[in-house]
Length: 376
Image (spheres, rainbow, N blue to C red):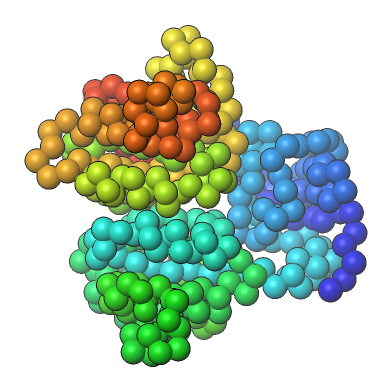
C-alpha cells in the first residue's frame, strides 16, 4: 500500500437549488487536520477556501457516497487524481448490494443486525417496486439478466448497499449459499443456515459479476438508468425518521425490531441525506414553538437518516397517534422515567438526540410521508 499523503482529491457534484443547476467541484480533503477546500471546475477558481469542517471523514470519501459540507450535499462521482484513486482502491474497501422481499419475513431487523454485527456500514437503502424501467435496465446486462427476480415482482423490494473490506465476498459468506444444505454444512453461522426464510426466492446477494451493475442501476453516481420511486402507501400511515446519531451508534436494526415487535408494518424505507431547505420545511411547525428546534435541524443535517413509512397493526384507524405512543416522549429523561419500553427511552440520548422524529399531529401525517417519499 502506498504511503498516505496529506491531501486527497475528489470530483463532486452539488445541485444548486437557487439556479436549479448541477455544479461540479474538486473537493480537496487534508487527512492530517480534516480541512476541506472546494474548487469550481467550470470557473477554475476557489469556491470554498481551506477550512475545518466537522463531520467529514476520510472513511466517508469514496465514489458513490454523498457527504455534507456546510449544509451542501456533495455527491462524489469520481477521484480527481490518480494518487487518490490508487491509494483508496488499495485499501480493499468495496461496496456490495443485496435485494430482499420485506414481506417474506417480519423479522428483517435480524438480517440487518447480522450485517451490522459483521462490520458492514449501510451506505444506501430504499424500498421500491420493480417497475418496467428497473426490469429493462437489469435485462440489458448479461450478468444482471440472469438474476432470478420473478419472485420479487409481486410487491415492494428492499435494495441496500453496504461497505466493508472485501464487501462482495464477505457479504456472500455472511448470508451463505443459496442451497440450504450447503449452508448448514459449510456455513453454519450464516444467515441462511439460521433463518431458512431468507432463501434465494426472498433474498439475492450480488457477486463479483453483478455488484457493479446493480450499484449503477439502484445507486448511480452519474447517468442514472432508472428513476427510483420509493414505495409508500399514503393511506392511514405516519412518518418515522431514525436520526443520524442513532444510525451512527448502530441502532438502526434495534429500532426496527421494536417496531416489528409491536406489530407495526414498515411500508416504506428510504435512506437519505437531507439538505437544509428540506429539513426546515419538514420541521417548520416546531419553529418558535419548541426550544429544541435549532437542535432538531442541526441533528437531521448531521448525516444520513433512515425514513420509514409506518402502517399500523391490522384494523388500526389512528396510526399516527398509536405510533407516537410507541416512540415515547420527546424528552428522553421523561421517556425513561414514565415510558421505559418506548423507542426514545431505549435509544435516545437527550431531547435533541432522541432517536427518532415522528409525526406529532395526525393531520400532518400525510404531508410528512408524501414530502419525504415523493417530494425530496
